[in-house]
Length: 88
Image (spheres, rainbow, N blue to C red):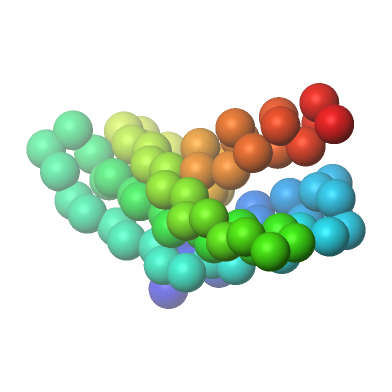
């Protein structure tokens, strides 16, 4: 599905800027139609040396393509961790 492809592309871009000792895996992407628009929830697994963390992000696309909403959900899931890595 197109949301899955867009989410993987967003995660690939994140891998380019993330530290080398990290592993980012898109576990699942879910799309739900709501009255307000298309909601996307992304589940990302972050593996670092000796630890695993499940990150969840979501986005609501009111009048944008589902690809943009899926990418935004991935960014929402990982943004706090990327900030932590940038600070170290």
